[in-house]
Image 1 (cartoon, rainbow, N blue to C red):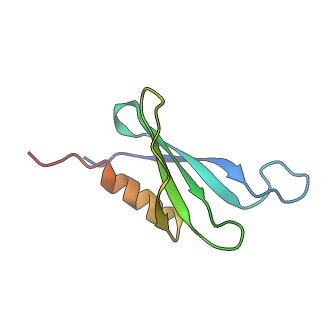
Image 2: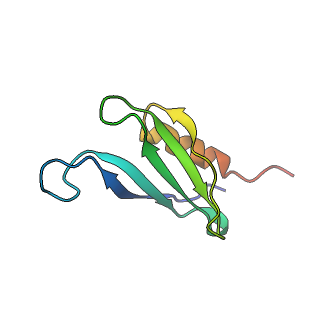
Length: 88
């Protein structure tokens, strides 16, 4: 089953005095199974790309930041792969 994840911008590099006016460096991911969510953030910003994932469980416990991805799309693909049901 493929889940329909949604990306919600939640962190930016500020560009002057405009709120949320700069480059996006973080997303909250919705639409995940079992009440889970995730965050994806660019730890390399603003000079490089180093996207990482943190899983947040239904009880609000969370994992360490994992992965090193060149793009947010690569990080999202890894997250989707990690949510695939295991074959029985």
